[in-house]
Length: 145
Image (cartoon, rainbow, N blue to C red; front, side, top):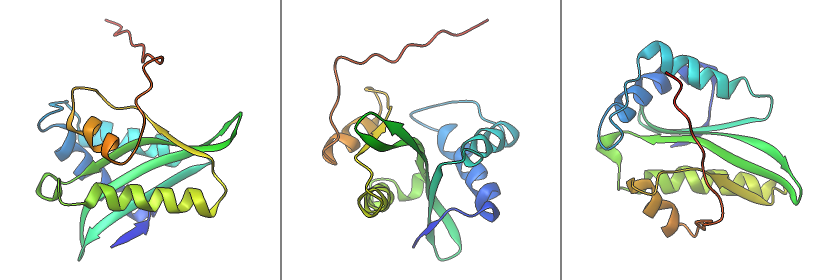
């Protein structure tokens, strides 16, 4: 079942976030504190949009977005989406994406944007959902030591 994010879901979202992104293929090093802080930063955005996905009382996925002003109208920017490893490749991500797209249509939002790694399974997932890979954009990053 998909439902709108509630602050009472934040701890479960943080716990699942750590489990997902510390595993393959990301192998990141999140702690419960850093995950909680990151997700809270998204939630505190005044135009935050979030959905959670549940199997009975178990959180199995979430998507955190925010609405942004763009020259062609409002757009939804997907900040993060994560699905429990036990439920990946079973249509759960599509359910969350469908929820975001439904919200966009109902609210006159003109586009949905996101960033993902070309070397990650998510890249092909988004392509299957008709998202375009824009070759002319570059994500720039510098690690500060």
